[in-house]
View 1 (cartoon, rainbow, N blue to C red):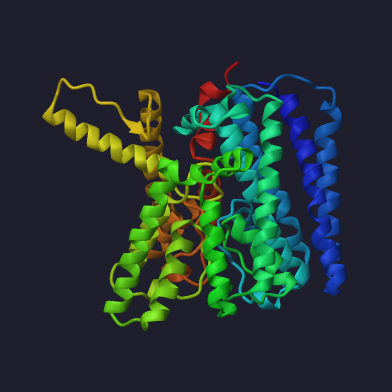
View 2 (tube, rainbow, N blue to C red):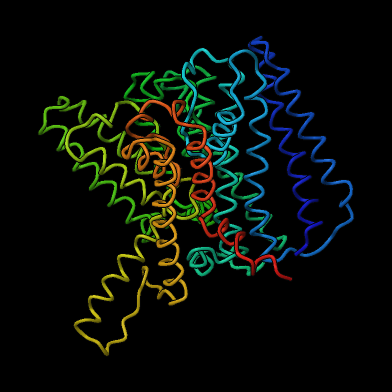
Length: 482
């Protein structure tokens, strides 16, 4: 393992990350909110630490291997989220404590959207902007990680993408060609963000809210510049725009990449994963809206409006809100939370287990049923026209098993801190799926949870964002052996 190379890269990343604190500092000067110094101190500490890591190892040059990739991926989010919490601890009398600041920073960078803050409307404008920016940066990092890096590491069945995506994504090791893909993904991501911001402004948002919400919408994050989230604007047009961009961002960015490169939209309709997601959401919207109508929770138009928005928001793991779905009748709150376990497509900014894994689990289950009827038959698992190798199928089952095991272990851990069952399972599920909203005591915010529970949830956010195995592999003795 090239430890010195890894330290050099982390040092560079940390110094680059410090530059992301300049825009909120300028926002602070623009609005004269008086907390520019919090970002100045954050920049100074980040740059100094980055130099300490970089300078002794600046001449370390070595080709990165798979083990290095795992460590860099895990350290990338951990280190940047820890240093990203600095401004949240330093902005004055209402600044957050260490636990809450770290929780908020991890929630932002992992695009979870869970918050410990109340009174967001009264925060300094630069802090409100900074929270949104954290999600936007995290969303782009997720896309590059999931589309360009994780497939090369063979994490949890993601290697399937190597056979589907053209060009540099087929490489089996970390090479400079990944830079070309990452650059194209940046262009697509930035273009979607600008388009979303313009649409929000045309629908009635001011530039500050439009910019902030475009960051969190395209990142499928869920942070808002207001306590009432998207519901603050009470605008059907803004809600439709939000739904549209959440759907676009829940599709794989590899599809956006191919559509951009080949100037064709047919990829979206030909891709099995995208089709499954659209059918899944359509079915869920139908069930939700009909239930809201039949129980007379809302009138016809309000039921359609709120049902559509909340289903797309929760199922894609965005977590924006226009209504309190936790108070909806029957099994609807539970159904929406279960939908978040599916999440979006692989290589999107959405969380959850990812649609492709659900497809494979269902198809493998059907194959086992057929084998009971025809024991000697050779039945291939196919996604579209492509047969899936058994190694990928096994990796998917391994991922699913680890996901379920971690969910229950963390839920028991949170309950051990004194949290009730409903709050525990919903907060752990929300953190692991990078969703944000929860039920029970955390239905409005996470601020009242015990500190230990928040640290467990921070770990859950990180593991959910990094596809679990990327973190778990670091705890195996074999990983550290020479």
